[in-house]
View 1 (tube, helix red, strand yellow):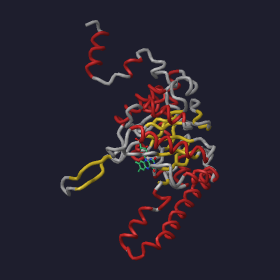
View 2: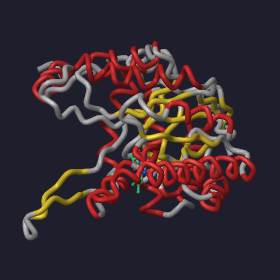
View 3: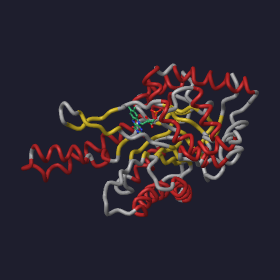
View 4: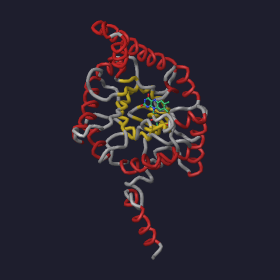
Length: 332
Ligand SMILES: Cc1cc2nc3c(=O)[nH]c(=O)nc-3n(C[C@H](O)[C@H](O)[C@H](O)COP(=O)(O)O)c2cc1C
């Protein structure tokens, strides 16, 4: 095997392939399997901000038993506390059982009400924290600046509480990915995870109701991440983890060539089983041997904007422009 070791947010990983936050990382048994099949690190299944207030449970109780509404404070706190404790216990147990980095994950939509929990996550022994920040800018009254500020507030508030490395997992829907990336790193983020994949919104036209489609990603969804890795490598002020649509060792190689520090995989493991991790590591190692690379650093970012021969083409969005460029190259 070639040497696949790499550093991510200051942590030493045996492989750049990380198991993304998912059901594969919600129990110690599964986490041990991830380690056995060669995961460089695991991102635990997220604890959700709602679980800090158990808001949803309260709403349910209140609608069923409105006459007791005032007494639900205690129930709400008790349920929330139990969920938080169980998550800390998962971190402690995982740290006892595996020697790969364990990255905790909190799904947050605001900076209020839960930030001190990040300190408990650190005390429980997590090696790093990933903040899954999924904000849908659905209000016509909230400006882009206000939305960006919410992300900034989240990372700043958490960084005040902890000294462990923190990654921000963000979606692709920003007018300027560069600007938000800059602001995230300046606010203390040690890495960005690009990109989160949101539930696919859909309608069931027989039941005339809302449904969700495309539970798992496909390899064709990797392209947007690849573009932004290639654009941000060398410019970003921290590490970059590639996510969404990485299903094979070829996908891993491409993301590393674009400049990713690490890659996260999830859907590919649901489709092929956890042992697919082993194949991905072997495929990466074979490719490195074939091309004479003895370390991941030796080729990381080779096809990034910073190092590529045709940097303008990375920014090309329009089909016409690409056609004209192809014509020019062929001398037409
Ligand atoms: C069943 C399932 C559960 C997931 N749970 C979480 C989660 O708790 N927190 C999170 O940040 N992402 C979660 N994700 C998103 C994945 O971590 C990943 O970012 C996304 O699936 C895109 O990567 P992929 O194309 O390799 O699947 C989940 C995805 C799936 C399919």
